[in-house]
Image 1 (cartoon, rainbow, N blue to C red):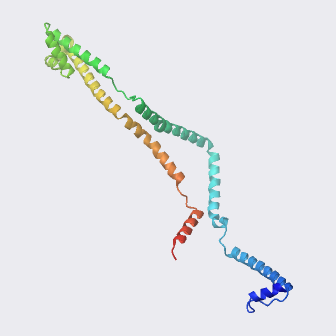
Image 2: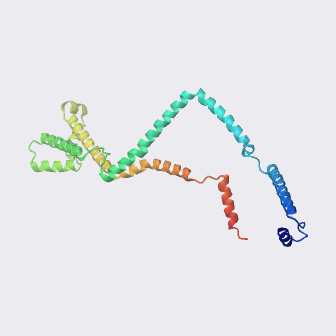
Image 3: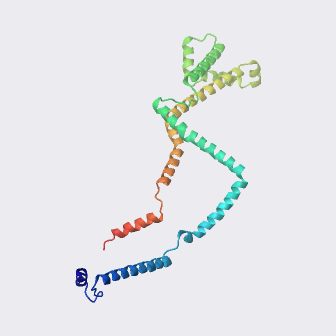
Length: 266
């Protein structure tokens, strides 16, 4: 036939047998199909024999160890469930306290400081200091009026200015005289009064120092809020790095090797 003639012309005699009829061509094609199927079966058998073992065979020690560990863990959890529940509740409360102390309160404090300029740290106030200074001034002037009944207004103003500047030299001479006979001065003299004036002076000095500390704290309150929020930012950074980190799996490693091989210039 015409088909057999074209087939014989395209394929030389030394490559395949010469086909003279369509039946021979059909039989040869069918024989090729059978041979191809037999080859594929042998090839699959060869792959099954020489291919890498399954994941279960490769990692059976890990799976076995994991099963043993999980059984012991389940037994421990069942026998200590009350303690574990208590620890979970403690961990929950610790997380809540961490959130309140290092997330909620610092952020709210930063907002209040920036938006409203509210200062929460107050050791003392200028009004309290002024009240203590006025009390000390009156005590010093009253003592000097008791010692010198005809005290002029000019001297009183001078004493007031000295007390404001922290100078109570006007009572120290009387204190030095009274301390020479402490028992007699305590019972019949002015020693107790002078001691109370000095106590009031110490109170004024402490309040002045506290007011300066208060100003320093208010000027750095925003920095304190940021410092309190640093642990929360560090935790968020660690969690973000863990979630966004590229996990090296077999697929990822295979893709990297394939990209490297593609980049090799032959």
